[in-house]
Image 1: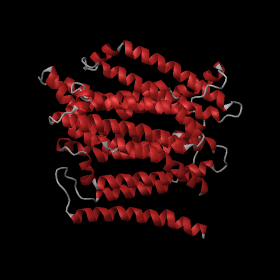
Image 2: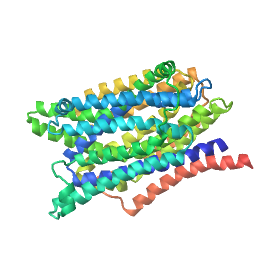
Image 3: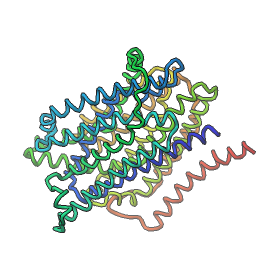
Length: 505
């Protein structure tokens, strides 16, 4: 249990920066919903979908490759680290040059011809975040979780502060006619949603500067080492790209497919773009509610990935991974029940009622994220067994599913199709990864317990009260849902915690 407590402690610290940090960013959604139209929010949703894709492209799996090669005895950790930095600095610098040169062309393609500056800002954001990922990985590998948390808190704090200043203070006062010297000097209403991106850019620069002391190039440049790292990381690049396609490309597809559908229905270009962005904004805002699960998964991944690599030689490592998976599923199911059974409360996270029509996607996306979390934990088998190519195959299959089903169903079901597709995709990837993992790197997962907790969670959700977005429960309804959640907690207590205590005694 001491090993599990150590991992839980690391996850808690990473969670303080990842979950709390992202949760604070997450709280910007109500601000955007109040200050921007759902059309404008659609712009934010789409552009950040592309950012996620580009960050993966520019890191090209070198983060995981760094973890793998820094634990191999014949490699000096300083050489591995320096070579990784050399590589990412070179490619990221080249990317900034290219994206700046073609910024207007890209803006025209995205149908934002008057805002080529968005493209340049995002190019710099993506490049800095890609480079910053390696010193952050170094902090994780050295278990310097507190410093990792400090850097991320600073990044999030600056971003939120600037958003509050530009959007809550400047924009709201300017719109109300309450201007002053500071607002007149620093706020331009024509920039609009661009202040969201400017805030992100400044926070990314500050995060980069805070990590400069960690960017040591003392190791020897070794081309042979880099080639081996590229060979290991290239499948990870495809895994990452496929993950982003599965996770974010639906928002880009939603806008473009709906735009073409509205054109075919007889709307003009401006009306079609407005309506498509409105639907994208509704879907993107409701997707944010489900990000609580994603935050937990990310915090767990930050702690578990270096943990699993460093404990690979332990004879009990597979048993530990199995037990971790059981507890991980318990937490995911608990989060699912908390959000779905109190969705009448969570809906106020989006304070504008025009977005509430999209709340129907929340339970579907939460279920999808449970499958994603299990898949993410299962994926350790191909990283430890050096069969990363299988990870690329699985993720590629998921990407094909995402593209195909969204293409077929979005014209019929709109953003509901995106949620259903996400669930189908992650469920399929989870099942395939499990069976391949059992073949190439057998881990004795306790399937009976995992199925039991998923079944109990599904059953409790099934007997919950029907959800009507525009209505609220009476106190008896909330009491009933609280009873359902406590039922799950009691089952877990008697099956896990009480049993562990009895074993110790």
